[in-house]
Every structure is written in C-alpha cells, then in structure tokens.
Image (cartoon, rainbow, N blue to C red; front, side, top):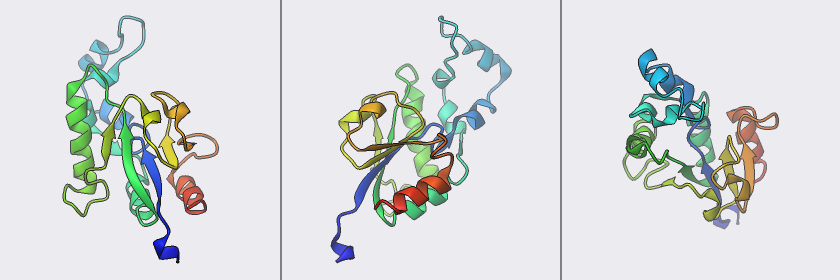
Length: 164
C-alpha cells in the first residue's frame, strides 16, 4: 500500500540553498565586485554580474540531500533569476546539469522552474532561504533554509522524511 501512495511535491530554491552564492562571488575580480557594489541605491547587485551563477559551488550537503529526498518526494528546483542578468537563466540550467546530470535519469531532468512568482506553483513544501518572490505566499509549507529550525541539510532531510 505504501508503494501506491502519491509522493509529496518539494520545491527547492537554488541561491544559498542548493548553491553557495558566496563561492561564486569569491571567484570574480575585485574590479568586478567594485563595479557591482552599488545599484544606485547604495545596495550591491552582485547577482547581475554576468556568468556569476556558473562559478558557484553546491551548499555543503545539498547534493546528498537531493539524492536522499528524491527517493521519497517529487523534487523540483524553483528559482528566481535576476531580470537584468540574462546569463543567469542559462547558468542556472548549466549548474543543474553539471551537478545532477543532463540525461532523463537525472533527478532534475526537466524539473527546473525559473519564476519570480513562487506562489503560483502547487506543492507540499518549498525549501527557500528567503520569503521573497512569492515564497511567503506558497500554498504548502515553507521550510526556511538557514533558519534556527532548519540550519542545514541534515535537519531539513530529517524533517521532511518524518513528514512524507
């Protein structure tokens, strides 16, 4: 009977959840970080650096967590790409293919969704480090990665496996 039970759907954000943004930032020159240090309002806009998303490492434990969770859940990546950085859209796909494979047997084959409105997706869980881009209005449960309750991948995996 357990085998016929429908798997719950889990969406996973990329930046600072699967992907370590700082690792990419540390790989660009100081001149580039200076150029993108102020968006005109005093805030940095490092996510607009061309190809920044292709330079990033996985968050520790993220790859193993996805492999484990894929046994019990329908997994999708649900990420937002900067509107003014068209390379980000390509780089995010390339990153997924690099770390999870690009063939039909890979965990995220045709399961990458880029959206500025995460609340439009239907599912049971959303793992995200921020409440922006509709994450705070997601119909299922928002798991705030990096929070006191969910500081790392082992805590998230344990929680989800207990709620499948």
